[in-house]
Amino acid sequence: GEDVEQSLFLSVREGDSSVINCTYTDSSSTYLYWYKQEPGAGLQLLTYIFSNMDMKQDQRLTVLLNKKDKHLSLRIADTQTGDSAIYFCAESMASSASKIIFGSGTRLSIRP
Amino acid sequence: DADVTQTPRNRITKTGKRIMLECSQTKGHDRMYWYRQDPGLGLRLIYYSFDVKDINKGEISDGYSVSRQAQAKFSLSLESAIPNQTALYFCATSDYDRNEQFFGPGTRLTVL
Image (cartoon, rainbow over all chains, first blue to last red; front, side, top):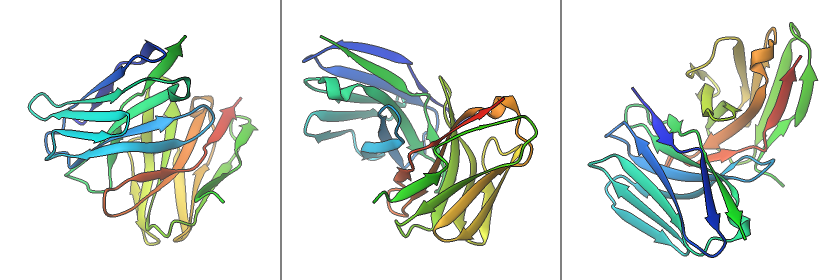
């Protein structure tokens, strides 16, 4: 069935890199996304990658996609306190263009 | 002004009451969605709509109904609220291109 899995928590020291991992099941996904949710707010798109790409870099963010293993990762370089949030991995289903499957979210906490 | 607004932002109600959550958007998108968020479970899709005449059930539609009054308005109703419907509810819209979801700020609903 359709499923997106992430670990629930990640703690990183300020200034280090954060790597948030995600696995998904639908090999025909068209887009894969990373959303960020700050306390008391809705989700906002952080970045996305089209399924025919292996990597996408945007300033401090690097997205890696391994289609063979159905693994997606988000690397945040030089993690800052403002990066504290819940990060959701999501996939767009090829079988239903409107349907997005979200993971359970990874809560990133930053320690000094 | 926010592109996707939700009212109310917080609501406490009693078991058996009928509740309506409202969503309005100024994005001009045809696609609108209702999700619920529970800790550790991510976002789960309740209903979605492609246009005013199109309503589709999501994965957890039991106990909920929706109405798409106009392109810009999509409301969610709980006909007879029960405690396990206590959750954070999000409305979202999306474009046709990347299917990027634009979320409202959420409604925190507590059913006693």
